[in-house]
Length: 505
Image (tube, rainbow, N blue to C red; front, side, top):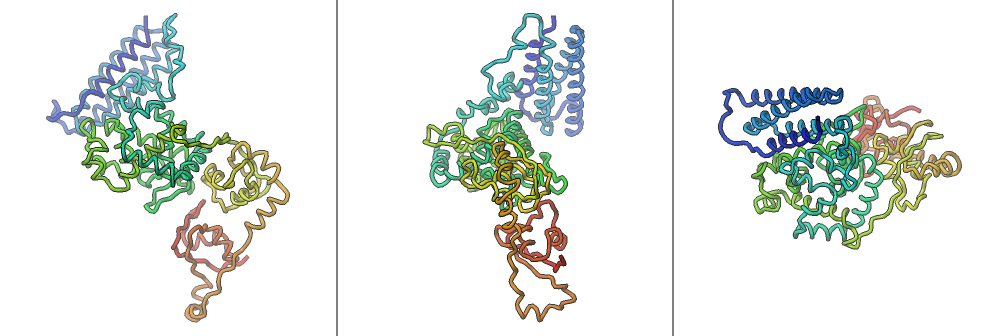
């Protein structure tokens, strides 16, 4: 009689073999290049995965005898290949971990078909299971998943060391940075429906996501650092590309909360495998670079801990501060009551509106006011929920925008027509006259050669839309074309010189 549990345990045993073997010195038995040997093992992984899935199909069709034979053979060969991979420095054991995980998940997806009559363990879920704890790797392989298991919801607190640096970070969050922490929490609540599912699918705790978001951007989706790190989780461009964040139709996907969370979760899990599931090293690598962290701490079972003198004293001051701040924010997310901290209740359920008249996010912010006890207004929330839109650029009637559900009725009542949208439009269309060019500049500039072109130096807080309004006649697209700026956001930065042509209306 075929039983799913038998094969789950067999796969778990195989995965334990993969996780329990560490690379050893010496040459492989066959004198081939390590890269070639690794590629051959990867091919076996693919073939064995296909064979295992074929066995599942046989089981579902009722041919349990052949299913048992095929699945056992696939797992046996996969175990052998994983063991060989552990002997090769160039072989990526994480591929085998992911392969075993996918096979186990495929088996779990078929449990209702494969369970024997009367075996309720195959169909009755554990009511106390935490989000992410159902990962076959986590539940079946403690050698691999020790720290990963501890990263599941309530267990995360067991691995955060409340040492001096973390306690100092707790004090910072609870004193001068308390407003930042509370604001980050509010911002996160509106983004949660996009970001948390990606972490949950990756088997990572929500508190870690919040800790990184709070420290990286404060939940400001459009945050950009001086080094160029961008988005809610502050990906550098190259790292973003590595994890699937590209530019589509002019929109940089680092600013997409859902995709950024997915990429961040992939990065965290990748680095957990490299650093033997040492959370502090992984967080430090996210800030200071995984290469630098590997050189400083090593990798695998022999990696030194982040708090060890050689690592903690050797990383940059920024990373020494970053790691405890992330851990402290995660800790406070889990235990606000212990620290006299109260996070606000946020009615963050998402909804949408269809514009009845052209409007920009800036105009909608004026129109919506502070309805719903939004002390700071709705500008940040609307920007975060519609990251692909330029907040100063009017969207046409009929355009759909994501808003908190509670604002749907407010929009219909206050912003579809009437005094507030009219006021918002009037303010939005205001033109700030540009200063007249000085006489010396006029005397030196040949009118015909320069075509009355002016130079404008971008100031802090400027957007191209605001600059276009102040220019008098030129629109966003004309100025963008003159300066080679790409939409839809046409990014500018303080100190940048822009050519502002003379445009006819």
